[in-house]
Image: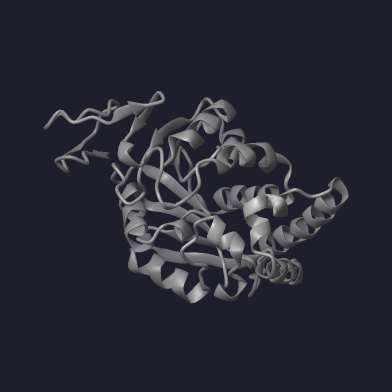
Length: 292
């Protein structure tokens, strides 16, 4: 079911034009744009970051490990997955994995920056992409599962976003989140990435439950690498200009180091898959369900 962002009418049809008031999203770089005024620039992210991310994600241990965790969560906890929406899809790296795992599913990706959508559409052309503000989602009871992967920390109104995701997912549908964790890990990297918070488990659980979801699984990850993260953050605080000079430095690793770190993260993923919930770590995975 679609919801008109102009008059709040709900309607079930493939096209985006509201039958009640005639409003329809404009097109920005060929994509339906529900918040075109935010498509080029806003406070949540640096749009110029997308091109470098598109180059690095597929080979970097952290993005690869997170993808394995996300795909496992969808496979294990989805009752079915015929439709999936990713909020803040960036360059489409997660959706490329979802498309391989669920080739017959109807997949959607939203991103507030139109710049990211160009990379995403090139990577996964079968996905339906749109420019959208996650605080105003034009769907009701529409998707079997919704994911937001390292997105909520960029948005001041995260509770409003979670309420919108509860509105958009079907009864019985799944919510999968990843977020950065632990305020004491805050560093210039968070400032550069336009984060407004790093979550505690307690805060994230409370906000997800307040939105109407039931939490089914929650665990830290990037746990074994926490000492290395602490050392890296301490170095950044001593030399904060380095992150401005090269904001992707943490992702630019030698092949042997990247491979070693990926082996460590793969071991964590295996532990999580076996049922272990890790108490601390640089990130948190949360899996929740809308009652129904």
